[in-house]
Figure 1 (cartoon, rainbow, N blue to C red):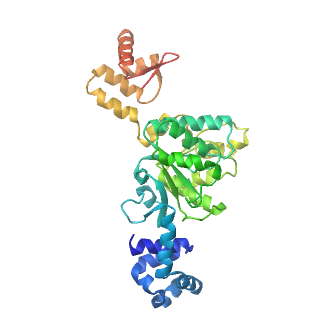
Figure 2 (figure 1 turned 90 degrees about the horizontal axis):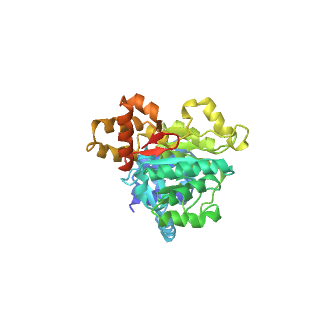
Figure 3 (figure 1 turned 45 degrees about the horizontal axis):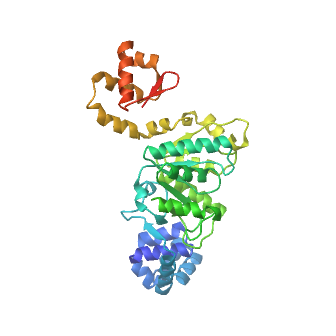
Length: 360
């Protein structure tokens, strides 16, 4: 760990503001500041004020930095720093990216394609079922899921992803030395054991607050290519995540729910205001993100199949299609199409569904 990184840990530990940290890092060499912040008193006071200078003067010393680093390392927590190669590329692109992120687990997930799935802490049975569907199918398609490890739907995201043998990232609202809520400690352990990742904006021993959960939400959306809202009440914190998603220029997907349910007043209102976010299928999410494992796998097989079979596959990339629509799209004579579909089903290229529908 170099001097700059050690200084960042200290400034974070003593809760120096983002503005003050940015000013110091952009204008001074870290070793110079550690050697003696008083040399820069006039400049710091002019830009940050007397109170902040006094706070910095009392906090920054080689002794305090060594103490902070030792305290940090004893918890077995690791960190990535803004500007380093291992820092998440997606987070670098958001406004005011944090100077440090704390983590446990596989940091390679920071730069894997991921999808955030968030919702209420008091979900209905419908909300749980939908969350399991989206989390398992998207994880199976190769996306890393991201959630907050809170009660309710966050837990469903993590559990469903693990059951699908996928990878998941949980972003906590407090320090990683203690999982909140405590009941999810075992789930957090399983996430790490199965190649997942725990992330926090906050150093060890920092307990969650209402504000920290709001800040956590922008990291959840910031890590992902897009965010799926399953159920959100009228004043749910989930709506805060939706706002961050939009501000960060990421894709927003909202699943409709019972219009009389208090658990979905906020999410249904989002659909009303932003109808383009309406989503009822994981396939739509994959299509919008341009991420379709089945399409990639089948593209390899296309080279070895006939032109007519290729035409059928291309039609099915759009989603499930009934026989008549498929015949209309491909312009293949009915008897030939039946024969082709049967052979493609046997070879595993496509699936036949109830109601004479077909899909990849």
